[in-house]
Image (cartoon, rainbow, N blue to C red; front, side, top):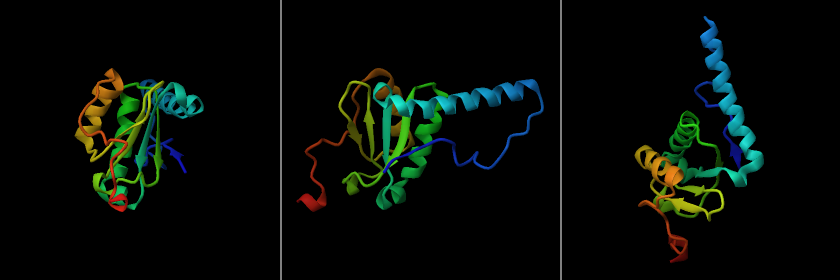
Length: 146
């Protein structure tokens, strides 16, 4: 089951105080980018798709932090994407794991993703299509397969 990130947990339940017209404009722009991210889920094959493995081992390894990092950074960098969570991807030794699907490309799974690796994925792979270290080969065996 997938859950699309709509509002960051930091901002849920908290209303920003509007003190000026510029505050109101900033709030409008922030909401517009969040709505855009949500609307992209309807045309997911034409935008970058990011799935973060959020099973128990992923969460313990920092997947929630990585999930929020991708959501916030893609929004800040104006990259059209859908960020969602999924269950166990089957690579417990490489958590946190994420799957990236660029439009028209096959999905690629990255393992041991921390904030630095996530930033590199955004800048090199998502923006430029450049392959980087950390890809888990499709024929990678898990402990259960050995």
